[in-house]
Image (cartoon, rainbow, N blue to C red; front, side):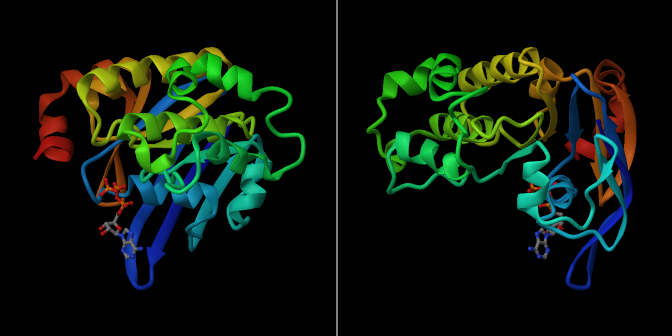
Length: 234
Ligand code: ATP
């Protein structure tokens, strides 16, 4: 469904992604694991067209999307939940969701407001009038995912969703990712938290210094202590 071949991405003269290749089939939840600064966010931004790779190919459902603008990529069915969540603090919970309705019809079929509230009962319990600034990190993460789901993505890019959240919330979030998969949405998840990745994904990649060092089953990754030490924990 998503196939990235040998992308090279820069910020100015800083050479960040140095030939990243990865793929995700329909129905998969794939994780991209790496420490701070490894290139996870840059990979997701390159897929979304926020960063434009200098070289390489990114195909989504067989269509080349490398070089497209973010709104064009989003229209093809890719949804992006950024690491910093981008909740509008001065808007209410409902208004934050309505932002996703910029395209007429969104929120009326597929992922409706009702379906989103069924999916995240905690958001319903908070109340639609709750201000974004008055929500915890976990609540903001749920809202950010809910807002992206309202765009009816076929494929979701989730950037470090567990970052900064308490263990109980992280566990609930893992259930959410598994439920999203059950709804038929494929996911590419960037993570530092290997336990979270273990609960949600079957196939993983390790990224370090803008290069891929491992591709395979997450069980095999967890069992390879040297690999984990060299590219993730140290
Ligand atoms: P993190 O958890 O810190 O976000 P990451 O794996 O997502 O880690 P990236 O955000 O992709 O890493 O960053 C990869 C490299 O690119 C880092 O060295 C970072 O300092 C650099 N970088 C990120 N954004 C910019 C930018 N806008 N301008 C210049 N360098 C950047």
